[in-house]
Amino acid sequence: MVGNPDFLTGIGLEQAPEFQELESPEGELHLRFFVPSGNEFALSATGIREVISQSPDRITLIPNVSSLLLGTLNIRGRVIWVADLGQFLGEPTTLNTDRPEIPVIAVEDQDTILGLAVDQIVGMDWLDVEQVRLPTNVPDSMAPFLRGEWVIPSKEPVKEEEEKILRLLDQVAIVRSARWAA
Image (cartoon, rainbow, N blue to C red; front, side, top):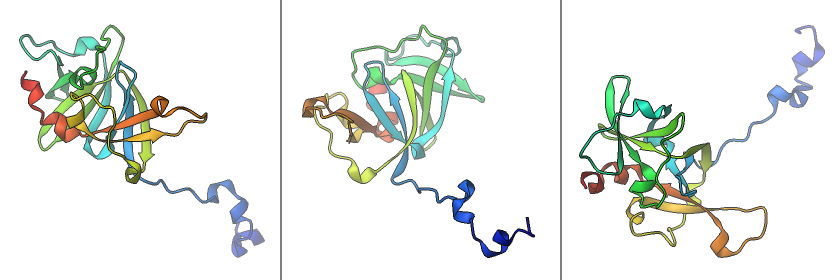
């Protein structure tokens, strides 16, 4: 390799795939997911403690608590409450717990951790927070927990009422909500 004349001159480096310039991500990292109604949401990665998939039988039912709560979960010796996020946001469809695993997003505010059970995790994505707009056509039950929304570009022309919307949630407002006492 040292005897190779290209090594000393640097010629040929730009053709090597491992030296191609990587695109730097723009925006902030967010976790995208769906609730049972099919609506898509995002949470800032900075407020997420972890994402786990748990068997429904690992969630311990607790009697006489809010119907929004599915029960508790033990994560490495710490007991956290797990809630149906769709129901919390006022969605009409309840989470199907009759399946092998339930995705749970553990969000944290100060010393409080809450597990948000969702239907499906899409993955992590870099989203431009400069493109967030004020939420439109949002139910009153959901509005206090939204920071804004993005319009996701479609490959085909669509009418404004058919635009795909990705809503950005405020995990601090969710954790601190008085709705948990109901």
